Length: 181
Image (cartoon, rainbow, N blue to C red; front, side, top):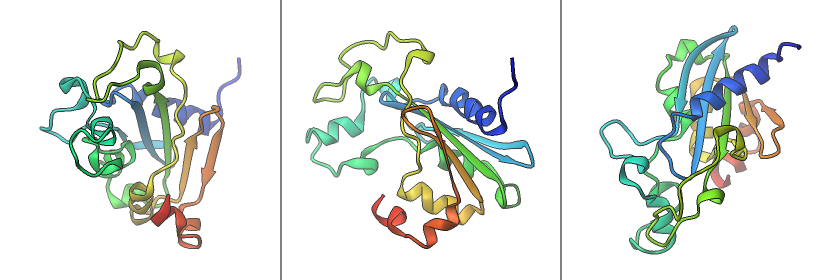
């Protein structure tokens, strides 16, 4: 048995961190690594003191998307902070400058389904390993935070299980990712 390369090793740790997620739809984990040392981790979940989707038993983002609450949809409707955000706010600027951010995610929505009120249609019966991978590239807001943090490399897992490595400084040349996703 061969030991995994560093990217695989740290993406697997990000996948483990994602198990702490409090989102009903998807679970994401993030790990910030500098000089082969983990400096911070984060998972997607509601801010401290705010009832999360697991506690509430329903998804606000789905409810809004179905037009139930009459509010704006998308990320603004979600009660969770993203894994990358939570990792970044847990590390100092010194720890992040020159670091690598690893992001992994798992998809639950396809296996559970949701009604118009945002309630799951059935219990999740799959084990963690059976959950399909979710595309884990950073969103617009997280991309901006990553640029401001000094992180020099982002590695994320794609739906097919492959890893993609990007230099966030490239986003300053093609700013579409920062403003249009």
